[in-house]
Image (tube, rainbow, N blue to C red; front, side, top):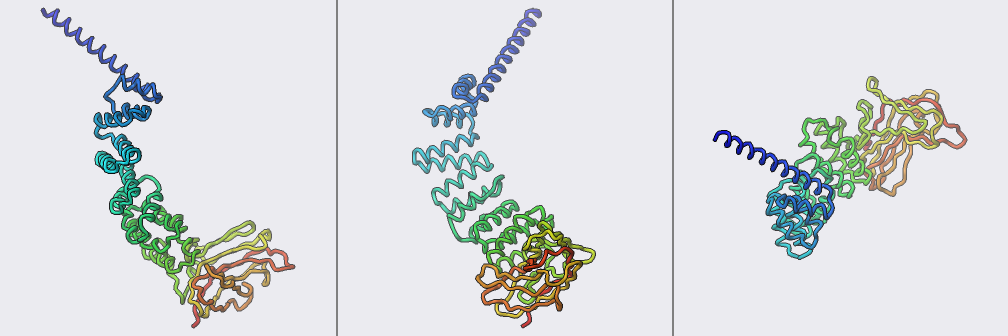
Length: 405
């Protein structure tokens, strides 16, 4: 009896092992057919393993005549199959015009999967329906987790409403989203909407290194766009936020003292209301921290016209200003074409220029033209007619601009 029982047990174990091996082989072959991803191979995979929802859902993509029953079958096999729910929703909305069923499917997808795609699908659905309240809710949910550029959502937001304050409230307190939105607003020339977004970003980042949060590229470039447009008020708001949040150490200019970093003690930021140095062929510019100054070297191979330094300055129209500087030269005499230039920003007013940089006294008075609130102050080289291009070095030790009345 014992030997017979042992025989039957061994028999059953062997049979089970053989069945398991066969089943594993079927699963393996079905997976191979599925990954081959043709109409016939996916259909064969479904026939071998009819209870696997991803096989059924993929077969629905190939078998368009039975797509809807197959998608519903996939969802019945796996209630968490959000992709099939989304496909059912899109078919209901686009092919059948059944927007209520579409909404139900989309909401079910978002309920079973909290990631990006279901949220984005609902955002797009409510935008198509022009349902503002629901659209803004799901736009916010999408931006909270989106791994992608938010520009498509931002564009939809501005098409839905032009209320900048309302749209600002949709942007989540997420540095990535705030940086992207700042850049979007800059490219869309919605400059007045930028300052509160930058303020939120700076507050949210706190004591983190601002270089890792777009200060020197996206935020700086956005600020430059604002300044180039002539929107001085907005630019000053952004600059003040950067200063107050300790993202920069520069002072905030005003109409009485419109120049920043005139003693060259701070490294050039290169953006906003600070100096930008512009090296070109034949021009070398060095700033020194131990003895605040700027050396500008000319090799004699520079272009006949060169922009060397520039800074945006804020002025009060109609007032008298005095520009003073301390400059010395090695190998470059006066009269070689070095001078300060003031170019009105976004204005038809004429450019004005100082006397030669190396003449004495090293000062220049000018009146800000009517309706001009900002200039680009630039140190430039222009080769005078009949003169060879100089070779040597200019050292700038300080520059200041002050209102005189």
